[in-house]
Image (cartoon, rainbow, N blue to C red):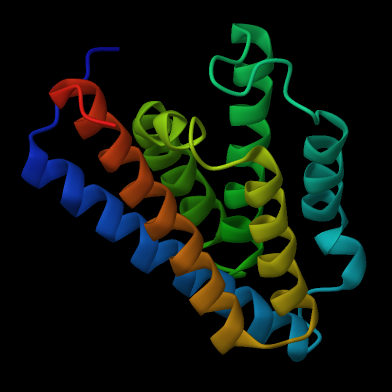
Length: 169
């Protein structure tokens, strides 16, 4: 389907929205896990997603991953984020999941630039730390870690794009 191009202001807004909402979703999931509304078994698909990402390392060519590899990596990243969104709220979980998937798809092309300078190992470590905060039933840390994860990747992606456009290193 047709997607209108994003302006710089739109891009900043959508990434800010993503960081705010997904960090809230991570905090909400930690609260639900702490209260027993979500079981460790229900978190297993998220943990398995991180484990599969781990098996994909090392990346065959970190500066320019093969297309199939990058597509699988991106799909798994989307599964991680949408899995958290879905479990974060009993009534709105599916809406949160669909929203997260749509925004992830819309922003993944920009985030892919960040992986040129942020190691895939770092992404796995951040995903693991977000999941640990949820499993430790610590909504504050889950929220902080998710926000930091998304904001650092966006910042790095923008810096990388700027370097490419300006030719600076």
